[in-house]
Image 1 (cartoon, rainbow, N blue to C red):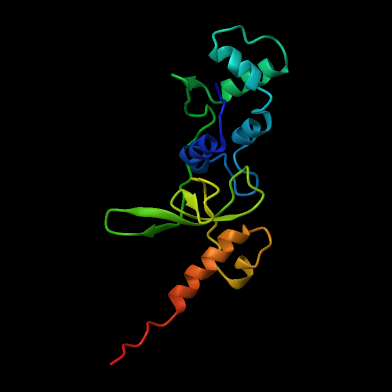
Image 2: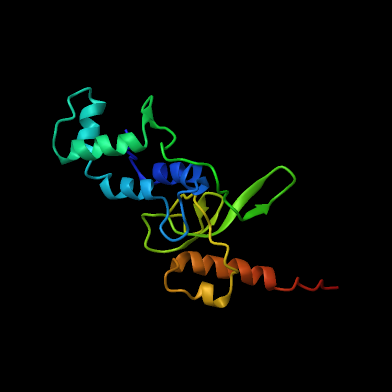
Length: 174
């Protein structure tokens, strides 16, 4: 299979496997997932033929489909663990919400986005993306917030949150 029908499927898979794998480095990301993003569109025709129980053919689409299916096989129509997966990393940066609940929070950049977004849980503040991947652990400074590579809406909402945290409580009136 190896086919991700939308970016959310790819992001969920990446969070489950790629972000915890020793082959996923900070500079280049997961090489297997990168191949999937590069060739995902190419393999669609063959993936659809396979889904419809037809011969996948011998065109470029079929080659891409066979290659990607070897790296990330499918079971019951869903992608399974990558053949290259080796557990060795953990997603950092958890914010303790209560004794039983923790969520990830911070800046992240989904593969399909050209901008960094601020995520709380799986959703970014602007609401455009779901992401379960690694979040940046750089301390949040004015320089980080002013970075032109950040989503303007996420920055706007994050600044509003930070301002609310810094505002002293109102004095009680008598």
